[in-house]
Every structure is written in structure tokens, then in C-alpha cells.
Image 1 (tube, one colour):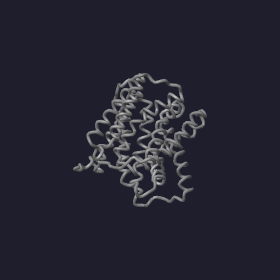
Image 2 (tube, helix red, strand yellow):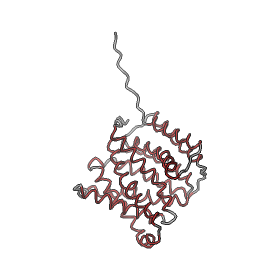
Image 3 (cartoon, rainbow, N blue to C red):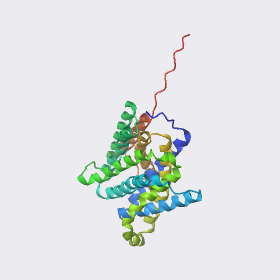
Image 4 (tube, rainbow, N blue to C red):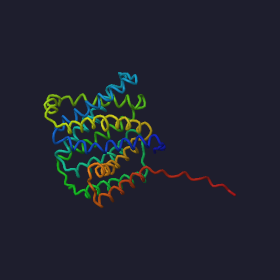
Length: 298
């Protein structure tokens, strides 16, 4: 069982990570009509790779240890290449409602894998909290008027959720040997390399894309693509993989707030109820029983 305390600095890191990742949905949605999914993923992580590379070099960073390169390449392929390419294609061929629910299965997969690989154990309270959060996401989806119809092509979103879970769990074994910035830099570089298969179509796509779509991709690369992943590794250094993953249920809640303030999209009452349910589930999943005070005879 995870006994690590969610201190102030870790709380801020998790909050910023969630806020940035939640804002990515609007960025992806605005860029996809002008930029195909594969080219979007490549351009986003070329920007992220360059951003992290400059910061890493400015801080005197070095290359990873040779023995760690194979694991870093696998993690980059699963957590960056597979996840983001599958998610981008999924947002084109699968309804948003189905996509949000399938992606919300990632914390469950993470908890199961963490138990098998890392020996992490979630108590009954945490599992109940995860179930409540999942129900909250379902209410948000229904409140937004999205259909929950699933089809065989929805498996691409499930693939994204599974790859993110494997990435989170096996990353836990390697991050202690590097700083969060260094490890994130290596993994994003590794994940960007396989995306170069989309390079032939990138130049004509960039030439034809409107400036606002390109601005969205630059934002996706610098903030949700680079900075948020650094904070994810920082949090994973201090919390168990299953516990940190449970906070991802707050992503739809934050996304609702961003859409409300930024785009003027007013959520329905059912959506607001779903958000409140998801928040309660996350709070329950991360609550800890207070130790019993020893009885003192008086």
C-alpha cells in the first residue's frame, strides 16, 4: 500500500500536470481539422523534443546510460508514439463520449499492472473511489450529450489506454536513476523517433495549415507535451503509479472548467454533477485512514 504523503510541492506538480493535460483536448480538437493525426503527433513532439533538449542542455544535461537505452526506447514508443498517435486517430474515428470513457480505463489498468509488477496494493477504499470517478466521467459524457456507442474501431482508444498504463508502471522502475527533466527528455526523444514515418507529409501539411492550427500544435508541444510530462515524472518519483494515475479522473473536470472560461461552453447540470462525483471519487481513492491512537489508561 502506498503510504507516501501528498506534500505541497507534489500537489502543485500534480495540479499543473492535470491542468496542462486537460487543456490539450481543446488544442487537439482545434488542430485536427487542418492537420492529419500522424503529422499532428509528429509536429507536437518535435516541438516538445526541441523544448526539452534546449532546457536539458542549458542545465548541463548528458545522454542516458547505455544500459538504460533499450528500456527508454520501449517506454518512449509505448507512452509517446503509440499513445498519442492512437489517441489522435481515435478522436477522428470514435465519438468523443466513447473515447473519454475508454481513456478513463487507464487508471484501472495501471492499478492492476502496478499490483502485478511493482507489488503495489490498493485498498477497498481506493477501488471504490476509482469506480466512483469512472461513474462521474460517464455522467460528464452523458451531460455533454455524447453517445456512448462503441464499435470495433474504438479499440484504438483502448490501445492508447493500455499503452499509457504499461508506460506508467515500467517507468517507475527507471526514473530514480535520473532527474525528472532528464528522464522526460530521453523518453520524449525516444517516442518522437518512430513518428518520423509521418515526416514526408509534414512539410506540405505545415505549409497548408492556418496559423491558428500551428499555434495550437506549438502550445501542445511546449506545455502538455513537454512541461506536463516533466511534472508527471516528478509525481511518479513521490507517489505510487496507481495512486498518481487515479488523479487522471480530474482531467475531464478541469477540461470542463477550461472550456467554460475559455470557450464560453456552459456545461449542463448533469455534467456538473458528474464532475462533482469524479472529484469525490478521486478524494476517496487518495484518502488515508488515520492511524489509531494508542489507548492510554488514565
